[in-house]
Length: 418
Image (tube, rainbow, N blue to C red; front, side):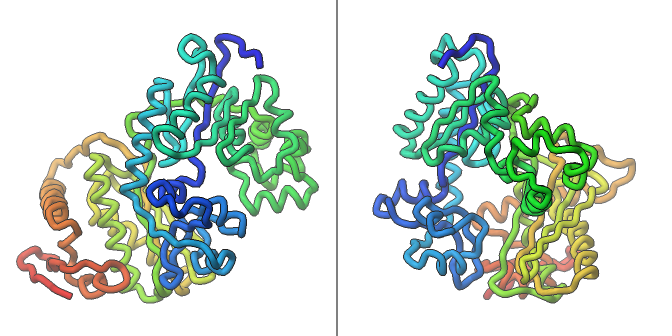
């Protein structure tokens, strides 16, 4: 294939079935077997990842593990090991950084590279991709699928076309022809609801989407019809951006072993999630500006509620105050058994907060949380918690061996043991 100098080239690198492959890497006896990474089928866990052998039975990420086991009874269930995955992910990113100064990390197992102008060092984008694939296999023992194209959108879709262990190159000028036969669901941002609307109008492929009249696209795209058409033709002007901290949000969520209905139990679980999120913010020296609450009910209906904070914060107490109000509002709209609860903080910034003219308690709260973090680090688990949540946190929401309960005045504390 002829590659012209000075053309823009983007590579999307995606580790195949990463969590499952990572487990097989350290447990070779799992090779060739259907592997499911997730929680216990008895504890309402969900599938974090599945090997291709398991996917052949219909197992997919985010599916309840109990359902996955029914589809694939011979599957091997492995509990997730975040530390191991992060270790491999860091090594993966280190390799990517040796191929391009512009690496945009998208998630733990995928990234974009700007491979423009790589002819002198690597012989061009395609040769770079081949070298990268070989190195990841040799040094990490993992398979990576690569998409090589003129922009991020096409590169991302191309990396998925020949999985696993694929390498798909889309030449400049071939974007629309490559996209045309693909189903509309392939385009990022088109979910199940939008797809159903499009198919009801007879629009099943991206080629059809690219030329569909406004009247058919308006229910899906609103006033952004032309942008949708451009994307359906494979047009994307976004640059690859390299950031020191690629995270755009921090948060935690928890699937309960049994649906929860009462506000006290949900509040205790919510506190634990905000506590962990605040600790993450402080560890990363970041402040959040917006809180999003996620609720999944027993019938799998999922809702989110979002609100901006009065000021950027890394204090879990402030996150909890706002998240509690969002939770009460959501439950007032629909009071039903809750299967999953989540908290996420967005609008992250590392800018220091400006204190008010009068002491509003921020310095004292900051000192308190730093002390809480030091105690948790030494103990290996959070120990300080409001007294009203201690008994509930020893159950569903958390299983610590010991907790310290603080009354709201801060004048006394009591140690509790299970």
